[in-house]
Image (cartoon, rainbow, N blue to C red; front, side):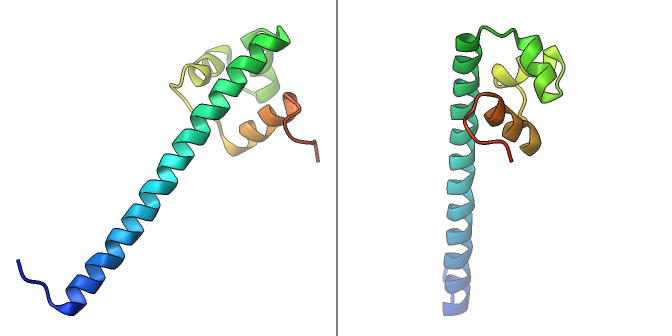
Length: 92
């Protein structure tokens, strides 16, 4: 397949965009896994029950369990609250 200059340039640009988006997705996924691991560790250290943490985040016990097991994600607000609950960021 022969491409002209415009097609080749366009394909390069599209490949760069795809690579950037893919990298961002990989970073986002890593961050989710790291936060989940931190949440599990902090929960164990605190002695709280999943139900208690779920209530603090506005989740059901099942929703909290699904998050901790990697079957669900938290909203931005829930992530922020989780970080506040475990004193990982300051309350504003």
